[in-house]
Amino acid sequence: MDDNSFFKSVYAAVRMIPSGMVATYGDIAAKVGRPRAAQAVGWALHVNPEPVVTPCHRVVNRFGKLAKNFGFGGMEEQQRLLELEGVEVIDGTVDLKKYRCKKL
Image (cartoon, helix red, strand yellow):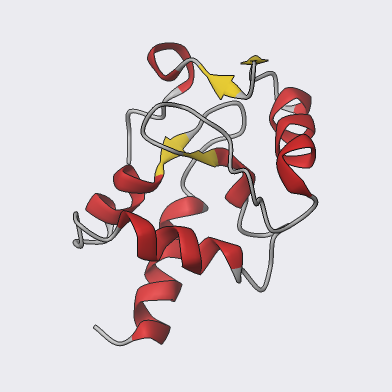
């Protein structure tokens, strides 16, 4: 899988996360058939060409932490977008037991 098709598959998977839910970088990596590529998922989302269409703010790390370097306005903007969708963020962390998307 070349970078372009990998990135496209990542964006397609992220678009499957419903509003009010989150997924981890590892969840997305597993969904696209590259379970050890969580870091590459992070890079793909950092250069996401359509952040409104592909809601990369719904992707957090394996502990539910927001991205320190969220590419579209920083961690505060990621938190703001999640909270607009009803996701509670406490100390920069989302409760994965409550908000993790189970149907990826």
